[in-house]
Image 1 (cartoon, rainbow, N blue to C red):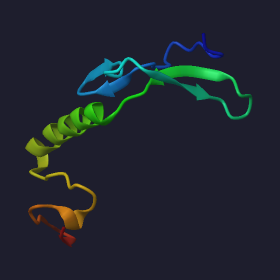
Image 2: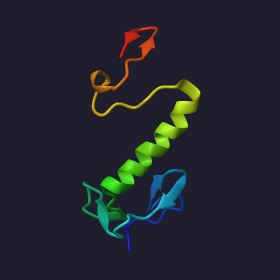
Image 3: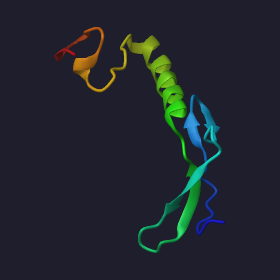
Image 4: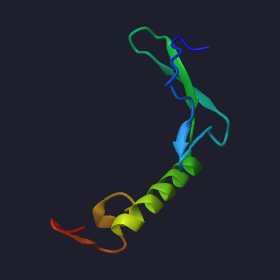
Length: 88
């Protein structure tokens, strides 16, 4: 049970257009630092869920812009894109 029961409080992760639990089924508490009360239990997502979320974001972006995501920074992109601000 949580300290706050709000109808809009989500207890799942939003991945690829769906609310999902962690693949492992694990959760962790979200704690109000002022009171120490547990506000909610949320999914303890990991690398697999993160990869799916990034792949979904890339699919959503690519048709509109033709841009690709980079690993860590614009300089690590496998292909250089030109924008009005220069190459990245």
